[in-house]
Image 1 (cartoon, rainbow, N blue to C red):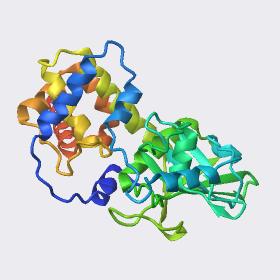
Image 2: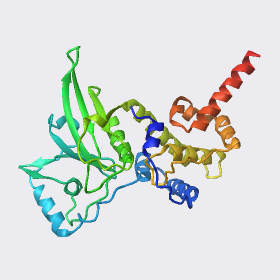
Image 3: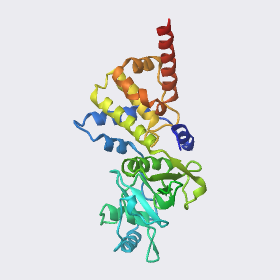
Image 4: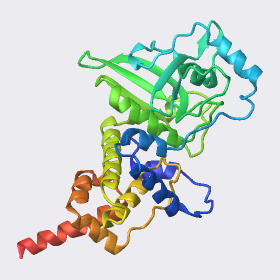
Length: 306
């Protein structure tokens, strides 16, 4: 299982200038507030880094040939319909849909660019950006109790988009909502900024989808909290910082978390609405929040004992 800390280690940033990180972050949240009834799931996806098609795959003669290869190809968006031991391409669209196509059709190797255009019915040759792209392999095995266990192995092998490891976030969140209980999910990991060329079981790690869902739920709850309160509300700044620290797939994500002051930590602990949101999901929060809660809980216990 890849936890929050391990994901942070995978994301070795280039240490570029931090410039106006906080102002960009709060601008994002101010945009959310302008929407009366936002779709928070889409707002969350909008905060994620998207991957554009690479140069060399944009010429019209290239896209036209790729689109021709997809003539007669049936796309799937349900993992249950994938054939076992057959390698498929996949993409995750900006609106959170996952689409699959066989890597080969009648001996012709299909492309992620063609898949993105066909999935979104793009006819002008312009390839839309995606949240993730790669290949997936489905296998099935019988356990000792004779129950069939289905496995899905994902990687980020896409020469057209070359997504970074943060692309897994959108893949996992989509599948966490749709996969049946008889599936086990694995993702290929190794090192940061890796463009995986092929599926390699040696680097595939299991993922606990329940943790994925809880992490996403906390992010959505924080967005709802921010939207529900005035920007001057003390808890909004705290919630924004927590959100930015755990939103590793975010466009504005910084590997070094934005620190919370002692006053902000006190605000978090004293704001019962905000505290209730994170109390049972502390493992997804920044270390300083977890440590502060431990200290406060310990102090409360000692006070009660006295």
